[in-house]
Length: 401
Image (tube, rainbow, N blue to C red; front, side, top):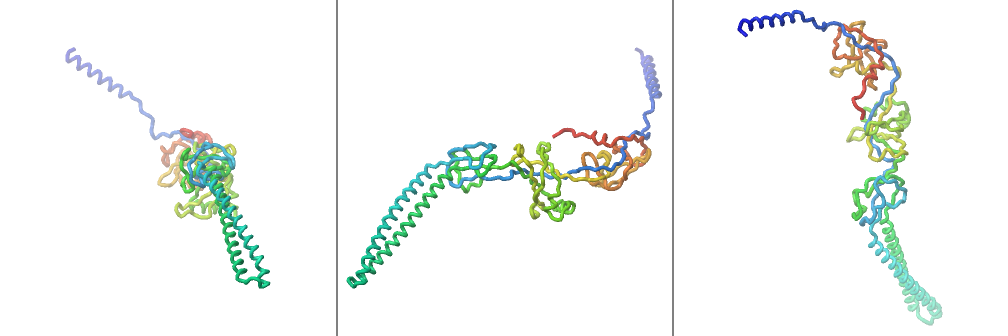
């Protein structure tokens, strides 16, 4: 190809490009009104919840400890096993204990023999005194002999008292030795579930051990403990009906337990007690709710969340998606025919994708329910009236815990 042909080809291409550019269509007008969903502000009765982290404990938790020192000979239960009151859990080595008990029993025999001998000495001394009294009265013998016999009697009586004391001590020693033998058999103090068993066969245990042999928990009913800070507690006192704290507790509606896996526990609980003072270390006060647990699903040490219901009657609501926040102030856009107007609202609570509004809008107002990030005040829109519930229910969690 020669240079002329090449030049002509280039001119044709430039012309084609220029022609195409001249025929390109204009894009959509960015200022044209666009459709937006709007919902009517309604008044509804809504149940909200206040949530608090909680820890679960059995109604009764008894630490099982050894009353004497010894080596574990047998572990007769397993962790998580249900047991009855008095059931044997552990046995300690008893060889030395049995020897001590046998020696104590022998000591009782020796002490009884001492008592018998002392009683015979007292009896003999008493006979001697009784024999000498009439002889002294008849001046056959001197009173010195009688006095000596009486002294011997008192000495014999003293030895008898000592022998009886020795007998009592021997019996006490024997009872103590038998008790120690009995203490080597460690029983469950209550009906319940066996917790962790940190000591195994052959471990040396004793009453001064900081760690118990195990814990037996009675969990047919469980306690859920949760805390309120001082501000929340004062609000509770001010907002809950009742003249006394006990009355206010009775007026708290049944509460829900959300377990660690995010599921609600099948049974409702009741808040029954609150501690009498603010913890100076944490600035909080402790509440206790009770839950039935006949199925045994909840165990000592579970965690979760307590949800206390809060009822709002005939409160104004808008979708969560209709609001946005700037510098701690909550805004939304109201549709005035086909024009947007920026509004500021005061929020009472947020419940299930609904915002509960105290002030800033009126019942019947139309608020823009979605896409608010692309709006500005005074912007032209095409309002599309939409059912509030369809907006709220369209917001689904990304995943379920």
